[in-house]
Length: 95
Length: 490
Image (cartoon, rainbow over all chains, first blue to last red; front, side, top):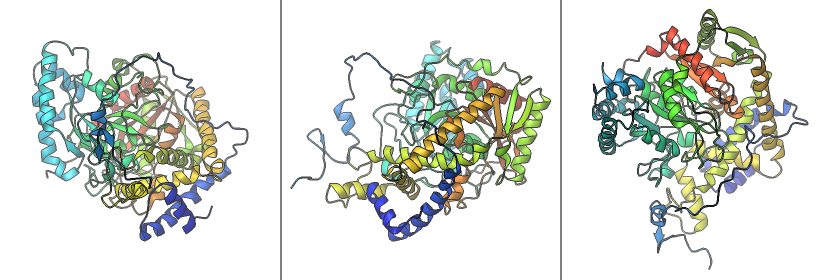
């Protein structure tokens, strides 16, 4: 797999991050090194192997749907960088 | 006996028998932090006032006989800074969470509170637990107490170093790909990575949710076993936590090495392992053989695919988990953002360090359309094969034995410039997380530079008991865990 400048830009956009030019150049090289190594996985024969996401079999975990107190709104808002009228404040999104 | 030299179990016993007060114990740890943390930088935050108040509360409960059942009542503890503590900053050693004060406690924190333990502070780590050196911390690197020019390992580097430097009696860390075991190996202390699902992850800031587990780091096996008995068990707030028989730490002290079948994966001693590490780990195997274990080598060729599979799975989960940092709900918000898009991009770009950004990009890559099957799905298939090779080995052996890391602690700065090199150091630990197994790291000697070497014992799922029994007997038969570095006052 070849890492290009365009791919790095695309990955920045997907992750909502922006690198400096210097970071971009080093990332291109680092990601290339890492992916070249990761590509050794292609040697492993995985035909007919079911992908495993959970280490151990976990079925749906059910509980009774009881009314319980949830976290206080004021508490949740304590960590918000900006808040107003008991709400999170965000920049205007619709013109 | 001096408070700081005691194990957690000894200290609790002395507190219960009124030789020492909880306040004295807490003060002793706070004083040690004041004296030494300027040198080692283990802590991101010390909560002196809260700790001393809490110490008096706990003393009262102990005096009233309400904590008789807790093996660690009254013991001061330090907690890795990715475990939520109500009202106490939980930063993940990241700028983006540098002012974050959780409004609730992680389940493990609730449990150690119930057990009458006293939190003295939060411990430095690699940013969001991504790294193996603690150098990616926004608050600066932690130094290895055995040599301050070396890294303590990571990501629970602050936790392992604090125990090694007697700045903590015992600590909680977390392990996603070796983050408890490897720093324990580098700092000459003991740590347990529990079976996936045995300790609640509720309130552990997520890195890679299918791999993360919280576990103890302590001076010896018995302390880790006692701590594990306190934090383990089903929690309804974590759907992946499992129901199993209550762990009794005193069982760990009763076991025998004799007759245990221990397998050594020959692929754990291949290319890249340092000569001294190999020598010490094989000497440990020899020692266990003398003590009556049956030791046998076997091939485990899948070892070489562990790191590729791990970095795909961990990065994929990390990029999803870290999408929550948006500069709006909590955490850092960029001052210069003018619209919503800029709020996301600038807050994240200014708030995350480079290693975190790298893993976000790698994760987005392996999950992006066109690459998903070739990378992410392939890694989950490899996960299945890796777990199967462990299960096959456990048909023949009670546990597996190997090194924790291919080297002893590296010099500060050595691996920062070369991320792939840092990743390769995780070769012996990541497989255990992929397979969901428990593993313990215990000191087994020193290299020619007098840096500690760790031995790893890997167990069957939910069989922490057997590996800890053997580790306990090994520790008793050797004196590596008793050795202490010469500490440097700040």
